[in-house]
Image 1 (tube, rainbow, N blue to C red):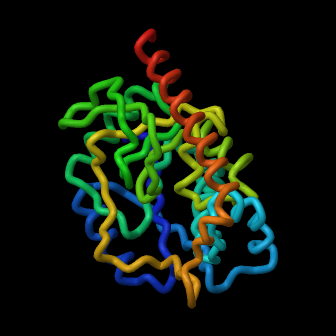
Image 2: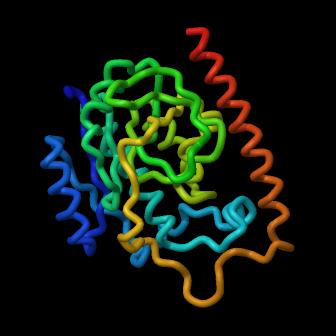
Length: 251
């Protein structure tokens, strides 16, 4: 797969995760590079300034946590590294991802139809209500999403997507996996592979440390702005998905 570069986002302290994913990538025959993740426990003042806390509270209905900002900054750094090199596509992986045997075949299929996507999710939390628009082989299809599909443990991007993300992801107003699939926000063709060739291992503890004490989620009486924002956002998601599906059908 000429032109493909694989990045694995991994905290310096997460040694066992690094060993686990390195072994799996070797078995799949995928060369890769490690990207040292930004540690939410040690954010600089400049990094902390990359959070728009009032917008986050309004849109997400929770208190932000440093680990989420570290996650976003890590993915943004992956975009910078990608654009600084010659690669045409970047496979971005978080170190807790489960890699299926069909991943190399799916990647080869996707790189042969680059005009159909800018970012493709290869893992999913929630179904995303996918509408298949193309066959990729090995039992997988390229799909448009009509509903929310969180998770960012595995995805493929082109240079256009990376540039759009660098321009629009910061300051952070939502967790990374709640915003990077908003194709209507970034002007991108966002797609999903269904069924996803990658998954998330729930047995591995998250390295995004939660806040101590009571739940960070606000009481329902404080969440009215969040409900209104989500209603508007999900309406836009559905309209975007319907438009992209129609575009694919007419292509």
